Image 1 (cartoon, helix red, strand yellow):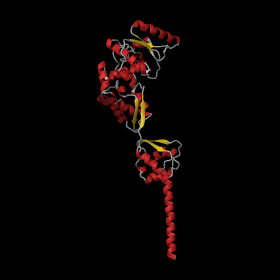
Image 2 (cartoon, helix red, strand yellow):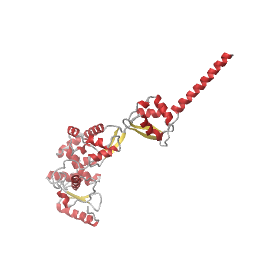
Image 3 (cartoon, rainbow, N blue to C red):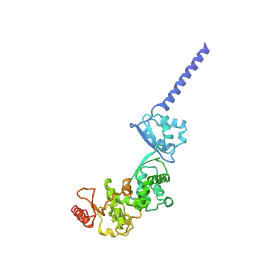
Image 4 (cartoon, rainbow, N blue to C red):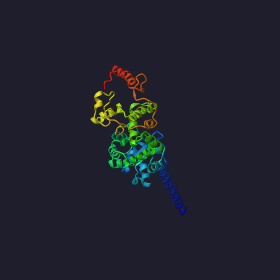
Length: 347
């Protein structure tokens, strides 16, 4: 009888212990441990982070940091941190959270357009990637890389085709740069290369001309027509005389890219810069801004016409009036100048 009591007591103790262990396992591993209301939360773990850094990142997202730390230690995560961008789902338990931030590095969507310089691009990218603007600019402007890839300091901006790209948040500046070069080469299909050759232009010249077209008009449907004007000028040996290049030349010469210039003055046309297409014939040595695909294809698929001149149309804002003769152009220009003076646009 006494022995049976001992066995019963041992059994009860075992049941209590099992219950306690089960509760411990359930409360630490399987109970939801998220504190946010959105369907998911984005977690960014920087390169070189330790477990304390991870806990600090997760602190606002978790209900119980203690249970998370316990499970993380048991799963060996605390000594095996991996940098990246992760997503934690609402209602996830500690086990699921750790699995998410251990193996679920998810790419981010990186977007860029309309940048005037590599410095601007690097700054824009640093807001979307882990790398800072300094390291990004150093990689993008590396002279050895540029020379090997067929670029130089003037043409480098043309390597970056504006689009949305899927990359890992913690990708290195060099890896990102290499990916953009691959995207650039993929963009230049045999068809696009053939069209550039028919125009007698190199890729770099197409990009430089496309940048001018983009600066001249924001209307996508007008870009092939504007491009046609410049192609006509090139074929006839006329200078491009593009105001956006004068504006860029002024900014570059004065090293002040923040100035806003709405009106080009006659004195600006005398700026001694290879980007000043009033003073120097031909296509500038590089793009004055980052042309998008519609501008590039606008050049490659330019509209065939007999226009050599155009000026802003003050009766249909955003578009331009085109002319085949200088006399017709001057009439259109007088209307524009009259409107500019009337509205007090001096600079």
